[in-house]
Image 1 (cartoon, rainbow, N blue to C red):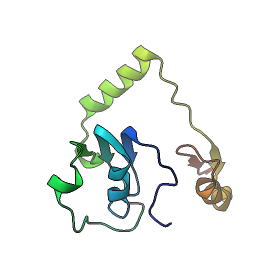
Image 2 (image 1 turned 45 degrees about the horizontal axis):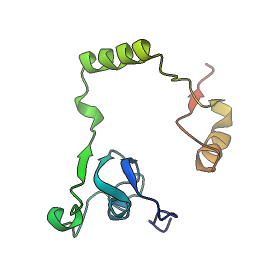
Image 3 (image 1 turned 90 degrees about the horizontal axis):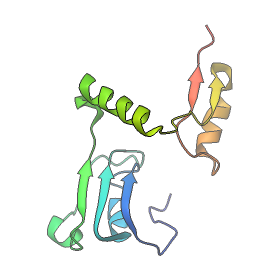
Length: 123
């Protein structure tokens, strides 16, 4: 991974799953007043270094995060109520059995992967 988006497009919102390794590149692709939610650490870098919030967020970008360790049962219920009320399609993308774990990893690494997958233990 070279850490750069392969586009000149800019965006109003982004869910950043790679994390500190690419966050400055993600910021560079944001519209004025854009919103980035940094929730992943897939890049293997855990901390953001050489970051100046005033300069790096100069387009008045909102940088937020999500930490799953502070989610309450009320928040989960609110999510489920929203899904029910607005009929949000939350079907899983693909299901693998445990003996297909290699294929599951290969699929996630492929360009065809769009979301999370499920691996079932058939026991």
